[in-house]
Length: 176
Image (tube, rainbow, N blue to C red; front, side):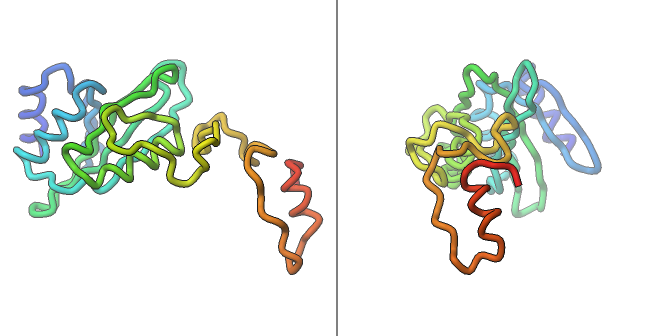
């Protein structure tokens, strides 16, 4: 893996902001604007033909609050590499890698739905789990653990529920 990292550093220079080796895993912190080119090089030149996952993380920091994490695999050689990009809270936009891996479509949509990170150039960026008009992002650290009372209609409480009073209080937004 060290040889691949060296080749990427030579090719992309300061776009590879940091290299982290921990417990046999390699993580590269990449400049956001270079993520598509780095991914394409990993796929075309180094055989990382499977984008196993793309997810978000809320670092809840003043600068570069959000991360997008790419877990990539070379299925032939059983290599794994992780890429990360960071974005500001005020403008959480990352270039889409759907032009490199079509399967990134769903991962990017899920990250958008849960964190509000938009993917520039995505062919169909819309919510997956939450209603389209839902104005919150549930995996952000500032999202209330109980949810936002009244933000979406909740199902009626099942008459067979063991603790119906607690369920009613929860649906009203009370703490139980």
